[in-house]
Image (cartoon, rainbow, N blue to C red; front, side):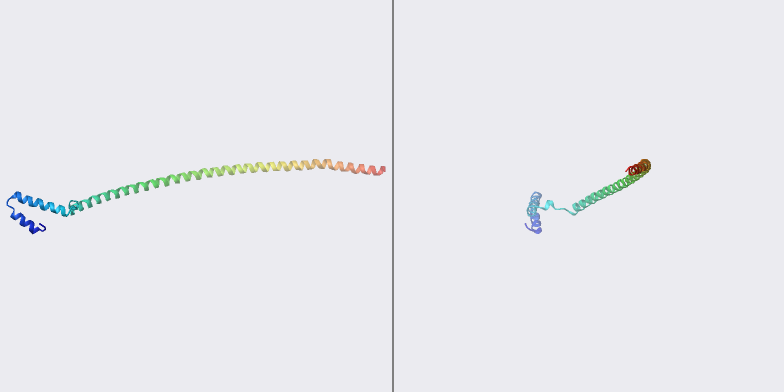
Length: 152
């Protein structure tokens, strides 16, 4: 029974329904033996059902991606705003620190200039004090040498 015609002949020659059912069952059995992968074959309905299921899953994934993208954009914008605020705060703090350092430098510069003037004044006083002592001592020395020269 390798053809449809042979199956037809066997069905028409069968004496009763029971024999016909047996012929049909044997034909199915031979068909399954000949094509063992037949139960695994997909029909157009199966393929269409799988396609629809996959399209639905793809749309769900796309929606999830859109949500994730929007959430990430929102997070990025929030981080940008936070960074901008932090940068502005750091700039303000740095400006305040710079102004404080400038004020400290000016104070230090004024103090150093005052100390330099004090040292200059002390040098001038010391110079005058030295001249007060050196000039009379030189005159005394000249007088002593002149006296010694007269005595000799």
